[in-house]
Length: 416
Image 1: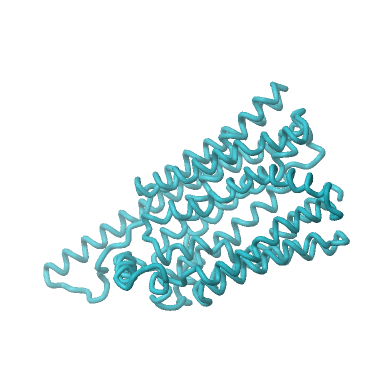
Image 2 (image 1 turned 180 degrees about the horizontal axis):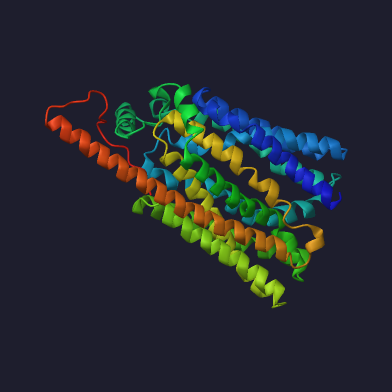
Protein backbone atom coordinates (compact mmCIF):
# COMPACT_ATOMS: atom_id res chain seq x y z
CA UNK A 1 0.00 0.00 0.00
CA UNK A 2 1.02 3.60 -0.50
CA UNK A 3 1.68 5.91 2.44
CA UNK A 4 -1.69 7.59 1.87
CA UNK A 5 -3.50 4.25 1.91
CA UNK A 6 -1.78 3.27 5.15
CA UNK A 7 -2.93 6.54 6.71
CA UNK A 8 -6.52 5.82 5.69
CA UNK A 9 -6.32 2.26 7.05
CA UNK A 10 -5.32 3.76 10.40
CA UNK A 11 -7.78 6.67 10.21
CA UNK A 12 -10.78 4.54 9.22
CA UNK A 13 -10.42 2.64 12.48
CA UNK A 14 -10.40 5.84 14.55
CA UNK A 15 -13.31 7.40 12.67
CA UNK A 16 -15.67 4.51 13.47
CA UNK A 17 -14.11 4.34 16.94
CA UNK A 18 -15.15 7.96 17.56
CA UNK A 19 -18.61 7.70 16.00
CA UNK A 20 -19.50 4.73 18.24
CA UNK A 21 -18.17 6.11 21.53
CA UNK A 22 -21.79 6.27 22.69
CA UNK A 23 -21.42 2.54 23.37
CA UNK A 24 -19.94 3.65 26.71
CA UNK A 25 -23.49 4.21 27.97
CA UNK A 26 -24.31 0.54 27.42
CA UNK A 27 -22.23 -0.38 30.46
CA UNK A 28 -25.20 0.99 32.39
CA UNK A 29 -27.79 -0.81 30.27
CA UNK A 30 -26.42 -4.25 29.39
CA UNK A 31 -25.02 -6.61 32.07
CA UNK A 32 -21.24 -6.27 32.00
CA UNK A 33 -20.48 -9.96 31.48
CA UNK A 34 -22.66 -9.99 28.35
CA UNK A 35 -21.49 -6.65 26.98
CA UNK A 36 -17.79 -7.19 27.57
CA UNK A 37 -17.71 -10.75 26.24
CA UNK A 38 -19.63 -9.56 23.15
CA UNK A 39 -17.07 -6.82 22.55
CA UNK A 40 -14.14 -9.21 22.91
CA UNK A 41 -15.80 -11.80 20.66
CA UNK A 42 -16.57 -9.30 17.90
CA UNK A 43 -13.06 -7.85 18.09
CA UNK A 44 -11.47 -11.30 17.83
CA UNK A 45 -13.59 -12.36 14.86
CA UNK A 46 -13.07 -9.13 12.90
CA UNK A 47 -9.33 -8.99 13.67
CA UNK A 48 -8.97 -12.57 12.47
CA UNK A 49 -10.96 -11.87 9.29
CA UNK A 50 -8.28 -9.36 8.28
CA UNK A 51 -6.18 -12.41 7.41
CA UNK A 52 -8.44 -13.18 4.45
CA UNK A 53 -8.64 -9.69 2.96
CA UNK A 54 -8.17 -9.64 -0.80
CA UNK A 55 -8.39 -5.91 -1.51
CA UNK A 56 -7.81 -2.48 -0.02
CA UNK A 57 -11.57 -1.63 0.21
CA UNK A 58 -12.24 -4.92 2.05
CA UNK A 59 -9.50 -4.07 4.55
CA UNK A 60 -11.02 -0.61 5.11
CA UNK A 61 -14.43 -2.18 5.84
CA UNK A 62 -12.90 -4.55 8.38
CA UNK A 63 -10.98 -1.72 10.02
CA UNK A 64 -14.20 0.27 10.37
CA UNK A 65 -15.92 -2.74 11.98
CA UNK A 66 -12.90 -3.26 14.24
CA UNK A 67 -13.22 0.34 15.42
CA UNK A 68 -16.87 -0.26 16.32
CA UNK A 69 -15.96 -3.41 18.22
CA UNK A 70 -13.25 -1.62 20.18
CA UNK A 71 -15.23 1.55 20.96
CA UNK A 72 -17.00 -0.10 23.87
CA UNK A 73 -13.71 -1.01 25.55
CA UNK A 74 -13.10 2.64 26.38
CA UNK A 75 -15.84 2.38 29.01
CA UNK A 76 -13.89 -0.07 31.18
CA UNK A 77 -12.64 2.67 33.59
CA UNK A 78 -16.31 3.71 33.94
CA UNK A 79 -17.14 0.06 34.70
CA UNK A 80 -14.34 -0.06 37.30
CA UNK A 81 -15.97 2.87 39.09
CA UNK A 82 -18.87 0.49 39.88
CA UNK A 83 -16.48 -1.30 42.26
CA UNK A 84 -13.89 1.22 43.51
CA UNK A 85 -13.98 4.53 45.35
CA UNK A 86 -12.65 7.74 43.81
CA UNK A 87 -9.36 7.51 45.66
CA UNK A 88 -8.79 3.95 44.45
CA UNK A 89 -9.63 4.38 40.80
CA UNK A 90 -6.30 5.64 39.40
CA UNK A 91 -4.42 2.45 40.29
CA UNK A 92 -7.13 0.25 38.78
CA UNK A 93 -7.27 2.37 35.64
CA UNK A 94 -3.47 2.28 35.56
CA UNK A 95 -3.49 -1.52 35.61
CA UNK A 96 -5.88 -1.45 32.64
CA UNK A 97 -3.97 1.18 30.64
CA UNK A 98 -0.59 -0.41 31.43
CA UNK A 99 -1.57 -3.35 29.26
CA UNK A 100 -1.04 -1.07 26.24
CA UNK A 101 2.70 -0.39 26.73
CA UNK A 102 3.23 -3.96 27.90
CA UNK A 103 1.60 -5.35 24.76
CA UNK A 104 3.47 -2.88 22.57
CA UNK A 105 6.80 -3.88 24.10
CA UNK A 106 6.23 -7.47 22.98
CA UNK A 107 4.47 -6.67 19.70
CA UNK A 108 7.60 -6.39 17.59
CA UNK A 109 9.10 -9.62 18.96
CA UNK A 110 5.81 -11.43 18.49
CA UNK A 111 5.50 -10.13 14.94
CA UNK A 112 9.05 -11.26 14.15
CA UNK A 113 8.32 -14.73 15.53
CA UNK A 114 5.13 -15.04 13.50
CA UNK A 115 6.93 -13.93 10.33
CA UNK A 116 9.59 -16.60 10.90
CA UNK A 117 6.88 -19.17 11.58
CA UNK A 118 5.20 -18.26 8.29
CA UNK A 119 8.26 -19.55 6.43
CA UNK A 120 7.21 -23.07 7.47
CA UNK A 121 3.52 -22.70 6.55
CA UNK A 122 1.65 -22.18 3.28
CA UNK A 123 0.05 -19.02 4.73
CA UNK A 124 1.49 -15.59 3.97
CA UNK A 125 3.26 -13.94 6.88
CA UNK A 126 0.89 -10.95 7.12
CA UNK A 127 -2.17 -13.22 6.99
CA UNK A 128 -0.77 -15.44 9.74
CA UNK A 129 -0.02 -12.32 11.79
CA UNK A 130 -3.66 -11.18 11.79
CA UNK A 131 -4.94 -14.70 12.46
CA UNK A 132 -2.72 -15.47 15.45
CA UNK A 133 -3.17 -12.04 17.04
CA UNK A 134 -6.95 -12.05 16.61
CA UNK A 135 -8.12 -15.61 17.28
CA UNK A 136 -7.14 -15.86 21.00
CA UNK A 137 -9.64 -13.08 21.79
CA UNK A 138 -12.46 -15.42 20.75
CA UNK A 139 -11.38 -17.86 23.47
CA UNK A 140 -11.02 -15.03 26.01
CA UNK A 141 -14.60 -13.93 25.23
CA UNK A 142 -15.94 -17.28 26.41
CA UNK A 143 -13.92 -17.01 29.63
CA UNK A 144 -15.06 -13.40 30.20
CA UNK A 145 -18.72 -14.41 29.92
CA UNK A 146 -18.30 -16.79 32.86
CA UNK A 147 -15.91 -14.72 34.99
CA UNK A 148 -16.73 -10.99 34.71
CA UNK A 149 -19.18 -9.73 37.42
CA UNK A 150 -21.80 -7.12 36.64
CA UNK A 151 -21.45 -5.40 40.03
CA UNK A 152 -20.19 -6.12 43.57
CA UNK A 153 -23.56 -7.76 44.30
CA UNK A 154 -23.08 -10.35 41.55
CA UNK A 155 -19.37 -11.09 42.08
CA UNK A 156 -19.33 -14.85 42.53
CA UNK A 157 -15.93 -14.76 44.25
CA UNK A 158 -17.26 -12.63 47.13
CA UNK A 159 -19.07 -13.96 50.17
CA UNK A 160 -22.44 -12.49 51.17
CA UNK A 161 -20.73 -10.39 53.87
CA UNK A 162 -18.08 -9.15 51.43
CA UNK A 163 -20.76 -8.14 48.91
CA UNK A 164 -22.51 -6.09 51.60
CA UNK A 165 -19.27 -4.40 52.60
CA UNK A 166 -18.54 -3.58 48.93
CA UNK A 167 -21.96 -1.93 48.57
CA UNK A 168 -21.58 0.06 51.79
CA UNK A 169 -18.14 1.31 50.74
CA UNK A 170 -19.58 2.80 47.58
CA UNK A 171 -22.62 4.18 49.38
CA UNK A 172 -20.32 6.41 51.42
CA UNK A 173 -19.12 8.06 48.23
CA UNK A 174 -20.77 11.33 47.18
CA UNK A 175 -21.91 9.80 43.91
CA UNK A 176 -22.12 6.01 44.31
CA UNK A 177 -21.21 4.55 40.94
CA UNK A 178 -23.18 1.38 41.03
CA UNK A 179 -25.59 -0.25 38.61
CA UNK A 180 -28.09 -0.50 41.46
CA UNK A 181 -28.14 3.24 42.13
CA UNK A 182 -30.51 4.04 39.30
CA UNK A 183 -30.53 4.67 35.60
CA UNK A 184 -29.09 7.54 33.64
CA UNK A 185 -30.83 10.89 34.20
CA UNK A 186 -31.38 12.99 31.09
CA UNK A 187 -31.27 16.39 32.84
CA UNK A 188 -27.88 15.60 34.42
CA UNK A 189 -26.52 14.35 31.12
CA UNK A 190 -27.63 17.52 29.34
CA UNK A 191 -26.11 19.67 32.10
CA UNK A 192 -22.75 18.03 31.41
CA UNK A 193 -22.83 19.45 27.87
CA UNK A 194 -22.30 22.93 29.34
CA UNK A 195 -19.77 21.86 31.99
CA UNK A 196 -16.34 23.57 31.49
CA UNK A 197 -14.44 20.84 33.32
CA UNK A 198 -15.82 18.21 30.94
CA UNK A 199 -14.43 20.12 27.94
CA UNK A 200 -11.09 20.86 29.61
CA UNK A 201 -10.61 17.15 30.29
CA UNK A 202 -11.73 16.24 26.76
CA UNK A 203 -9.24 18.56 25.08
CA UNK A 204 -6.46 17.37 27.38
CA UNK A 205 -7.30 13.88 26.16
CA UNK A 206 -7.29 15.08 22.55
CA UNK A 207 -3.77 16.50 22.67
CA UNK A 208 -2.41 13.61 24.74
CA UNK A 209 -3.83 11.17 22.20
CA UNK A 210 -1.93 12.88 19.39
CA UNK A 211 1.29 11.63 20.97
CA UNK A 212 -0.19 8.45 22.40
CA UNK A 213 -1.39 7.20 19.01
CA UNK A 214 1.55 8.20 16.83
CA UNK A 215 4.52 6.83 18.77
CA UNK A 216 3.56 3.10 18.91
CA UNK A 217 2.67 3.15 15.18
CA UNK A 218 5.71 4.98 13.86
CA UNK A 219 8.45 4.16 16.39
CA UNK A 220 9.68 1.08 14.46
CA UNK A 221 10.01 3.25 11.35
CA UNK A 222 11.70 6.06 13.28
CA UNK A 223 14.25 3.69 14.85
CA UNK A 224 14.86 1.95 11.51
CA UNK A 225 15.51 5.32 9.86
CA UNK A 226 18.16 5.97 12.50
CA UNK A 227 20.27 3.45 10.63
CA UNK A 228 19.45 0.21 12.41
CA UNK A 229 18.43 -3.04 10.74
CA UNK A 230 14.79 -4.11 10.92
CA UNK A 231 15.59 -6.78 13.53
CA UNK A 232 17.57 -4.37 15.74
CA UNK A 233 14.87 -1.72 15.31
CA UNK A 234 12.21 -4.09 16.61
CA UNK A 235 14.41 -4.97 19.60
CA UNK A 236 15.03 -1.30 20.43
CA UNK A 237 11.29 -0.52 20.37
CA UNK A 238 10.55 -2.75 23.37
CA UNK A 239 12.50 -1.12 26.28
CA UNK A 240 10.73 2.31 26.23
CA UNK A 241 7.29 0.69 26.39
CA UNK A 242 8.37 -1.83 29.03
CA UNK A 243 9.63 1.03 31.20
CA UNK A 244 6.34 2.87 30.62
CA UNK A 245 4.45 -0.20 31.88
CA UNK A 246 6.12 -0.02 35.30
CA UNK A 247 5.99 3.77 35.54
CA UNK A 248 2.27 3.90 34.72
CA UNK A 249 1.40 1.57 37.60
CA UNK A 250 3.70 3.43 40.00
CA UNK A 251 2.31 6.80 38.94
CA UNK A 252 -1.28 5.63 39.34
CA UNK A 253 -0.55 4.25 42.81
CA UNK A 254 1.09 7.49 43.95
CA UNK A 255 -1.71 9.58 42.43
CA UNK A 256 -4.24 7.68 44.54
CA UNK A 257 -2.10 7.83 47.66
CA UNK A 258 -1.47 11.57 47.34
CA UNK A 259 -5.07 12.23 46.18
CA UNK A 260 -3.54 14.35 43.42
CA UNK A 261 -4.34 14.38 39.72
CA UNK A 262 -3.43 17.78 38.26
CA UNK A 263 0.19 18.00 39.38
CA UNK A 264 0.81 14.40 38.28
CA UNK A 265 -0.51 15.16 34.79
CA UNK A 266 1.51 18.39 34.54
CA UNK A 267 4.74 16.61 35.53
CA UNK A 268 4.33 13.74 33.06
CA UNK A 269 3.07 15.99 30.25
CA UNK A 270 6.18 18.16 30.58
CA UNK A 271 8.33 15.01 30.77
CA UNK A 272 6.83 13.76 27.51
CA UNK A 273 7.23 17.21 25.98
CA UNK A 274 10.93 17.13 26.93
CA UNK A 275 11.34 13.73 25.27
CA UNK A 276 9.83 14.89 21.99
CA UNK A 277 11.87 18.10 22.14
CA UNK A 278 15.06 16.07 22.50
CA UNK A 279 14.08 14.02 19.43
CA UNK A 280 13.33 17.15 17.40
CA UNK A 281 16.40 19.15 18.45
CA UNK A 282 18.83 16.25 18.02
CA UNK A 283 17.43 15.65 14.53
CA UNK A 284 17.61 19.34 13.62
CA UNK A 285 21.25 19.55 14.81
CA UNK A 286 22.17 16.23 13.17
CA UNK A 287 23.31 14.76 16.47
CA UNK A 288 23.90 11.04 16.99
CA UNK A 289 20.77 8.89 16.44
CA UNK A 290 21.18 7.70 20.02
CA UNK A 291 20.14 11.14 21.27
CA UNK A 292 16.87 10.76 19.38
CA UNK A 293 16.44 7.27 20.77
CA UNK A 294 17.07 8.55 24.32
CA UNK A 295 14.24 11.03 23.87
CA UNK A 296 11.81 8.18 23.20
CA UNK A 297 11.96 7.08 26.86
CA UNK A 298 10.61 10.22 28.59
CA UNK A 299 8.17 10.70 25.71
CA UNK A 300 6.61 7.24 26.15
CA UNK A 301 6.69 7.23 29.94
CA UNK A 302 5.06 10.65 30.01
CA UNK A 303 2.11 10.23 27.66
CA UNK A 304 1.06 6.78 28.94
CA UNK A 305 0.90 8.14 32.51
CA UNK A 306 -0.93 11.26 31.36
CA UNK A 307 -3.61 9.21 29.58
CA UNK A 308 -4.16 7.11 32.72
CA UNK A 309 -4.64 10.03 35.08
CA UNK A 310 -6.77 12.07 32.65
CA UNK A 311 -9.25 9.19 32.37
CA UNK A 312 -9.37 8.82 36.15
CA UNK A 313 -9.70 12.58 36.73
CA UNK A 314 -12.61 12.73 34.31
CA UNK A 315 -14.57 10.10 36.26
CA UNK A 316 -13.56 11.48 39.67
CA UNK A 317 -14.91 14.97 39.09
CA UNK A 318 -18.47 14.36 37.99
CA UNK A 319 -21.02 14.55 40.78
CA UNK A 320 -23.29 11.70 39.67
CA UNK A 321 -23.07 8.55 37.62
CA UNK A 322 -25.17 10.14 34.86
CA UNK A 323 -22.65 12.96 34.60
CA UNK A 324 -19.84 10.42 34.80
CA UNK A 325 -21.21 8.53 31.82
CA UNK A 326 -21.86 11.68 29.76
CA UNK A 327 -18.54 13.29 30.70
CA UNK A 328 -16.67 10.10 29.85
CA UNK A 329 -18.40 9.84 26.47
CA UNK A 330 -17.61 13.50 25.68
CA UNK A 331 -13.97 12.95 26.60
CA UNK A 332 -13.76 9.93 24.32
CA UNK A 333 -15.56 11.51 21.36
CA UNK A 334 -13.44 14.68 21.42
CA UNK A 335 -10.27 13.04 22.65
CA UNK A 336 -10.25 10.20 20.14
CA UNK A 337 -10.07 12.74 17.33
CA UNK A 338 -6.47 13.21 18.45
CA UNK A 339 -5.28 9.93 16.87
CA UNK A 340 -6.64 11.06 13.49
CA UNK A 341 -4.14 13.91 13.69
CA UNK A 342 -1.44 11.83 15.38
CA UNK A 343 -1.36 9.11 12.75
CA UNK A 344 -0.59 11.76 10.11
CA UNK A 345 2.29 13.45 11.91
CA UNK A 346 4.99 11.23 10.45
CA UNK A 347 4.62 11.19 6.63
CA UNK A 348 7.28 9.50 4.50
CA UNK A 349 8.33 12.91 3.19
CA UNK A 350 9.70 13.78 6.66
CA UNK A 351 11.97 10.72 6.83
CA UNK A 352 14.47 9.99 8.23
CA UNK A 353 14.39 12.61 11.04
CA UNK A 354 10.64 13.26 11.35
CA UNK A 355 11.34 16.62 12.98
CA UNK A 356 7.87 18.06 12.32
CA UNK A 357 6.15 15.10 13.97
CA UNK A 358 8.31 15.37 17.08
CA UNK A 359 7.71 19.14 17.30
CA UNK A 360 3.97 18.61 16.92
CA UNK A 361 3.86 16.06 19.74
CA UNK A 362 6.04 18.24 21.98
CA UNK A 363 3.66 21.18 21.53
CA UNK A 364 0.64 18.92 22.13
CA UNK A 365 2.02 17.69 25.46
CA UNK A 366 2.87 21.24 26.51
CA UNK A 367 -0.75 22.20 25.85
CA UNK A 368 -1.86 19.25 28.02
CA UNK A 369 0.20 20.64 30.90
CA UNK A 370 -1.37 24.10 30.48
CA UNK A 371 -4.91 22.69 30.36
CA UNK A 372 -4.23 20.55 33.44
CA UNK A 373 -3.10 23.65 35.31
CA UNK A 374 -6.24 25.51 34.22
CA UNK A 375 -8.51 22.63 35.24
CA UNK A 376 -6.84 22.31 38.64
CA UNK A 377 -7.34 26.04 39.27
CA UNK A 378 -11.00 25.82 38.20
CA UNK A 379 -11.72 22.81 40.42
CA UNK A 380 -10.02 24.52 43.36
CA UNK A 381 -12.27 27.54 42.80
CA UNK A 382 -15.36 25.29 42.77
CA UNK A 383 -14.22 23.69 46.03
CA UNK A 384 -13.80 27.09 47.67
CA UNK A 385 -17.23 28.26 46.48
CA UNK A 386 -18.86 25.03 47.62
CA UNK A 387 -17.19 25.20 51.03
CA UNK A 388 -18.32 28.80 51.54
CA UNK A 389 -21.93 27.98 50.57
CA UNK A 390 -21.90 24.91 52.76
CA UNK A 391 -20.71 26.93 55.76
CA UNK A 392 -23.33 29.63 55.15
CA UNK A 393 -26.15 27.08 55.02
CA UNK A 394 -24.84 25.36 58.15
CA UNK A 395 -24.76 28.69 59.96
CA UNK A 396 -28.34 29.51 58.94
CA UNK A 397 -29.49 26.10 60.10
CA UNK A 398 -27.87 26.65 63.47
CA UNK A 399 -29.75 29.95 63.74
CA UNK A 400 -33.03 28.25 62.87
CA UNK A 401 -33.36 29.52 59.31
CA UNK A 402 -33.40 26.13 57.62
CA UNK A 403 -33.62 26.00 53.85
CA UNK A 404 -34.85 22.47 53.49
CA UNK A 405 -33.27 20.21 50.93
CA UNK A 406 -30.48 22.56 49.95
CA UNK A 407 -27.80 21.32 52.29
CA UNK A 408 -26.00 18.10 51.35
CA UNK A 409 -25.04 15.54 53.97
CA UNK A 410 -21.48 15.68 52.66
CA UNK A 411 -20.19 18.44 50.43
CA UNK A 412 -18.85 17.13 47.13
CA UNK A 413 -15.18 17.99 46.83
CA UNK A 414 -13.35 17.79 43.52
CA UNK A 415 -10.04 15.98 43.45
CA UNK A 416 -7.24 18.32 42.47
